[in-house]
Figure 1 (spheres, rainbow, N blue to C red):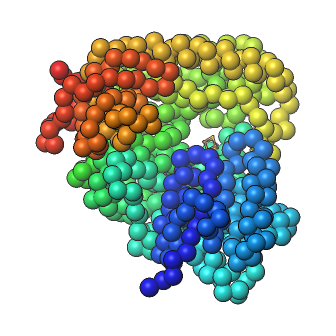
Figure 2 (spheres, rainbow, N blue to C red):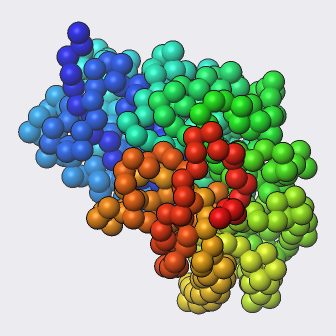
Length: 463
Ligand code: SF4
């Protein structure tokens, strides 16, 4: 039996990075590694980094500084950096930080066991892997190489179905650090979802930077809508979510899925970024305001109860007051259920970082505040519409508030907390909404869906 060793991983960033961390743990577990939450107990310390937010590189350097003492006291500990910052500046980091042993980009996680073993055996003192090629990447997700293990009682699980991005929006670093778009083979994904269902998972969230480009590169046997239908046919899977689709590629075939596939949840996160054609062009988003609104109309004509959320960047270089007004009017027209909004901050290495006409920070912040205030009002208005209604929830676990409170989500992705017994975890219950709070709702259970009960569509419940 392999000797048990401990890995500590600190993760920054998006859901995909969180999932990558889980995958790294699964891959390393084959070599006897067990995850720990205390770096003092670790034989391997990894920083799984994200380059999307501001000063990403600087944050990694300062975090690495925390582990210097551990490395000095226990020189056998391996210290590594993975993720997008590793891909972007990993070689420079190795030059600058003498106690850094290992750099591994997002395409090379399957190589981690060999890299760690080589350093442990002192065959190499330091190693760096930054290959983003298809073979390497697909091995990361091959479960015959390392199985997928979810925590007992886990109801919802992420599944990466594609990686990388070919869009090259001018503000975004992702294509530079995650590489070209690659889709996983459908058979591998379906097998993974079956295994998750076998472990009690009832909802899968399919991940990809532009998830609806699935199946295009390399050309696969299933399109994205066809993949959704195949996953819906897997026994035990009751809900399917996906994030994030790219608006330009939202095909009629995908929109039609909402008509015939009740397992696909009634929520779509469709990042628009701006309501101004001038700014969309500068961002190189490849769609116009009109294209976006047309897609929203088509979605709503097929699924009127669909919750739509989005992302906005405010204060992009060249954004004039009238451009921002276009964004505000788009917000009013669509009435998004919620939005994530940020003021523009340049990412080194992207075209927008050196674009002319920067918007002064105070103007960008003032616009951001206006947008967030109005979005907050719209969100509240939409959520108040739930008061007194009974909605179906998939119970995901105990609420953070504890005290006999459970938490779950509606099909439209509204978080609902309610008092209940832990035996309900993993079940569908109808909850009558009694209170709307800023980020969640509260209510009480009205009834439970029998195991053989019919699947309800959207957030409607017959009571
Ligand atoms: S679509 Fe644009 S914003 Fe999204 S990951 Fe690709 S380049 Fe970045």
